[in-house]
Length: 129
Image (cartoon, rainbow, N blue to C red; front, side, top):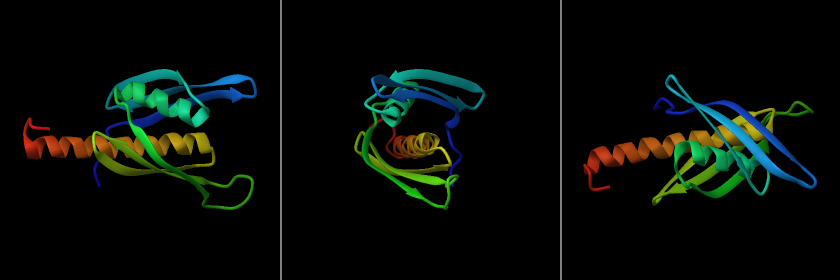
């Protein structure tokens, strides 16, 4: 298992009826703290747009799934995503009692997989990527 390049440090969303959904996301990369804000069609889209800004990547979300992995009002939600970037397709997962946080964790998890795969492809193919 490869160590994550980015980790989720903070996520805040604002959304509601007659409100443009916005998100502020902060990721850590080693000692660096990177933060961006973005808007979207909903709170999850806004979070994903902010993460894309931090990464400098325009990742395509191919699939999004949410399921409960426990019961009750404090149930843990697990989010699964399928992401595509430059022909590479990966899956990511994240879990939390907060589905927005679980969504962010899944996207960051998938993004880290993309970055590791791209780095491996670059080292295998030299500069021909």
